[in-house]
Image 1: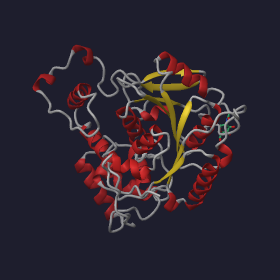
Image 2: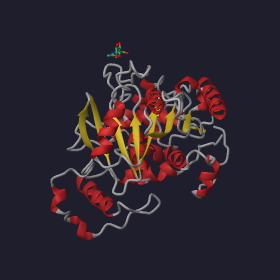
Image 3: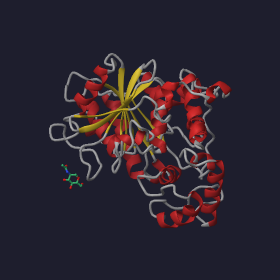
Image 4: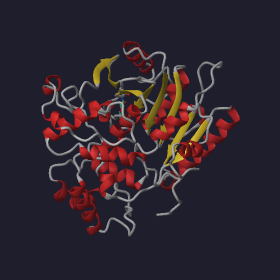
Length: 386
Ligand SMILES: *[C@@H]1O[C@H](CO)[C@@H](O)[C@H](O)[C@H]1NC(C)=O
């Protein structure tokens, strides 16, 4: 079991996003800079802004910068499909949203995708994957009333009947068929990727987040094929029932020879840095938001949320609305609401362990997560209980 409390990758990503607010001009500059540094690794800092960039190339002039050439957006077999391919793709990540959400949450709004919500955690999942060299494909589930995936046997599932051919169409069009395809999903999306890996031989790894991990899901329809490596990310401290299921699934995997691992996602303090994962929040606003929550008595000494923000919504909305102006605080549409859920860590999609999870899948699930963290120079964080 690896504590992820202080794992730092997403901090640097959040810092980059933090740069992205402010004026349109600044956004444009940032975008040009990002284009120039597209091949730079996650750990490199942005090159300094050159005065030359004050007049961007004409080709960038007509496009709002955020989003640039991507995503491509298309309805394929009734389902909205969005994708983005980095310059030298080495793999493909299919990402599956949770209930009440959609594939378009993974990109910022742009001329290419005006309705994209750009939720902070979904965007970070996509950015982390792109940085690692993955093309990212998102699909919106069939049922737009519930917003959930049709998590049932493949022959009856509206989604499972469509997903393999949708993915293959995109991979073929982008010339990605030879690359490793892995899948990430949270909650209802975690259920659908677990099932998808069973019916689609191309899927070579699964990251299933905050989802009941039943051994019956870890079966392939083709008896000659083994179920691929699977990593369960779960919020064990506040979700003990599902944590127990993960232990059961890990035991099952060990017996069945399926490489499997778990990541525990812990609560974290509400800090300006965390809130800045929402790109419309800057340091000042973040600090004011933390102060407002503290003033409302919602944080403990160490800055952790005392209660589930899903049950104290009216309280924190009242505290934060004066501070955030017109920024949305509506559940499932608001980056801030999402980040409070991440801080509380009971049930939410989170980007926090995606990079190490992809590294684990790249190693075929044969290495321990701890060893991978050490290789990456990330010391294991000290155990500190909230
Ligand atoms: C969509 O979800 C709603 C709410 O859960 C459900 O009542 C309905 O039957 C579902 N529709 C389809 C086509 O599955």
